[in-house]
Amino acid sequence: MNSLFPKEKITFNVPDAEIEYYPNFFDSNRSNELFEKLKNEIPWQQDNITVFGKTHPQPRLTSLFGNEGKQYSYSNIVMQPNAWNPLLMFIKNEIEEICNENFTTVLLNQYRDGKDSNGWHADNEKELGRNPVIASVSFGAERSFHLQHNTIKEQKLKINLEHGSLLIMKGTTQHFWKHQIPKTAKPIGVRINLTFRIIK
Image 1 (cartoon, rainbow, N blue to C red):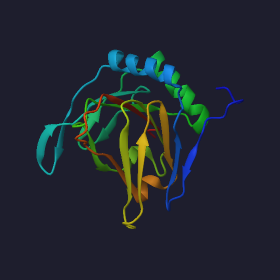
Image 2: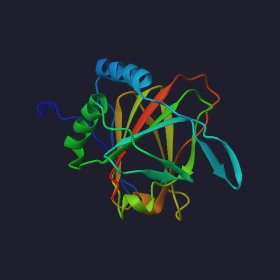
Image 3: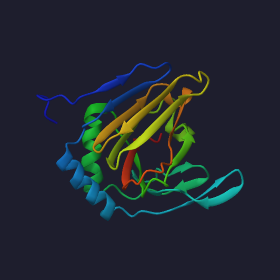
């Protein structure tokens, strides 16, 4: 990373959370290249998800990569990781320089169009530990990322996650806030998102 040009960082001043946003973490040429590679080289799958007793296909494609033996489970889905590949190691190393963390796992999501979404949730699975650091990098179509405080209802955030951007959530964010990527009726292209995390 070239420290002569520190990356632009936006810090959100909200209660009970530490949220940082780097709009141009990867420049547009690099982002275009990474987007194409991720779209074509990752083994994407569509799992079934059970919500309120009803099972239906998850409204996005996913893939899990990580250290051996670090399976990840959420919403009654248990995912076994693929082994790290050079493409993901490159992205991981770039993010780890900013976060000073050593991520064990990345969950990838592909939102094929505006109908693909991710409902309200927190990344608070017990295997993530007490105050998890979640680093989320986005490529492709811009999508709106909504956050809402669990008890202070007027505390809300909306962040447009741009092509090549990095969002970091840490501290007590996952205890006090939930987040979603809502559906949109706008005609919209593919978005690929990688969420790096540490499984204890």
